Amino acid sequence: MTEELTMIYDDFKVSNSKTINHFETELVKIRAGKASPAMLGGVMVDYYGSMTPLQQVANVNTSDARTILVQPWEKAMLNEIARGIINSNLGLNPQNNGEQLIITVPPLTEERRRELVKRAKVEAENAKVGVRNNRKDSIDMIKELKNDGLSEDLAKGAEEEVQKITNGAIKKIDELVEIKEKDIMTV
Image 1 (cartoon, rainbow, N blue to C red):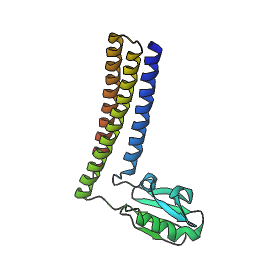
Image 2: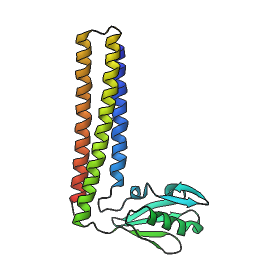
Image 3: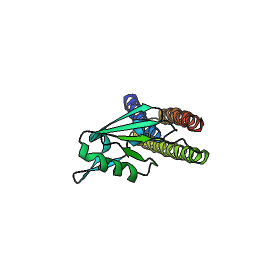
Image 4: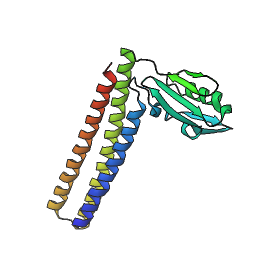
C-alpha cells in the first residue's frame, strides 16, 4: 500500500508542477513595462488563410528595454503580422519600415499597473484552484485505497502529506505573484 501512496504523492507533485509552470507562463505574458518577446506569445497571424502563432512566421527580438523587433520570414507578411498584433488588444502599435515591424512599448500608467496586478492575482487564483483540484483528485485516490483496505492511520497520514504538498505549492504561487507585483509596480 505504501508504494501506491508514494505514486499518489508523485503524481500530485507532477500535476502541481505543471500547474505552476502554466501559471509562470501566464505571468510572463503580463507585461511589466519592459519589452519582451513573450509579450507577443499569444498573437495569431492570418498566414495564407490559417491562423498561425506569430513565432511561426517571424523572428521576435528586443533591441532595448522599450523596443520589440518583429522580422517576418516573408516580407509579404508584414501587414498581416501588424494586423495580428493590433487585433490582439495588447495596446501595442507596430511601425512598418518595409523590412520589419518596430514596436515601442509605452511606459505604463499607474492605473494600467494596478490593472496588470489584478490580472496577475486572477491568474494566481486560477493556479491555486488548479492545485486544489489536484489535491481533491489525490484525496479521492487515498479514499479509494482506504476502501481497498488501507488502514485509517495511514489514510489520515497520507491526507496530511497531500495537504503539506498543497501548502507548499500555494506558497510558491504566492511568492511568484508577489515578485510579479513588485516588478509591475516598479517604475
